[in-house]
Length: 254
Ligand SMILES: Nc1ncnc2c1ncn2[C@@H]1O[C@H](COP(=O)(O)OP(=O)(O)OP(=O)(O)O)[C@@H](O)[C@H]1O
Image (tube, rainbow, N blue to C red; front, side, top):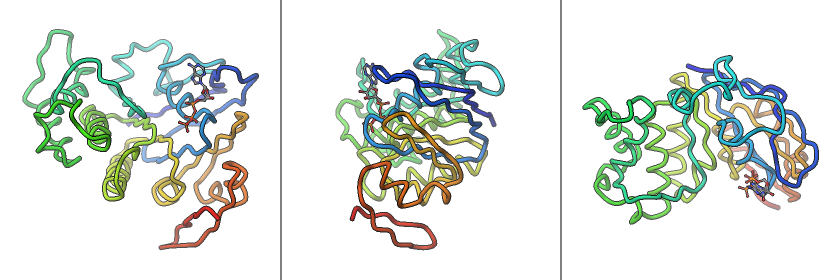
């Protein structure tokens, strides 16, 4: 288990003056959803929390230690990032790609162990990718590639998941399967922080919501206090109709 903390964090968005500070702790078992329109800064926030881009001010702490003082390897032993789109720089099979999730735990010349292989194969199985494990990732469909990204993160066994639109490219069945997987990870003590565009997935699967407005304004709290139609209409500049299914709000563009 691990705790990720943003302390007076101002994300550096090029061309945007000033910035609103974000201070919060993402705790084991929590499932955060970040919502906001295109360009609001969701990916930039996620990458700043991962230590992949410098903050304008403030800091990010992983288990109480500033990310800036930790090696990437130490960070990756606790925290996995699922990127929105990933360009693969060299040809690799699905299994080889999933095994990259074990690299933070291996020394530079150390080969993957039988246990590493077991974890990678288990992750591929969990994402229904076993039949594709010898295929080059470059030959996969968009949704299959997305599942490989998630399988790679799962192979990493992170205490903290930072996922940028994890359901990107996925059909309905796989969207639910991935959200159920992240939910299960949280139940087992991981902290999950994800950017989403689907309000209904957020309403069903997140317990904390962070709303990011185009000017950088932000607010966050328990999901039921954030998923308020009037606020979401202002967030997206879009009228919404709301109904309730199985006790959860369902939002439809009006
Ligand atoms: N390296 C960069 N150079 C210039 N502008 C950038 C850079 N990175 C991000 N931006 C700008 O910062 C803003 C926030 O981008 P970001 O990708 O974080 O938004 P987002 O909320 O994730 O959007 P989307 O919903 O479209 O994925 C955008 O206007 C983007 O064009």
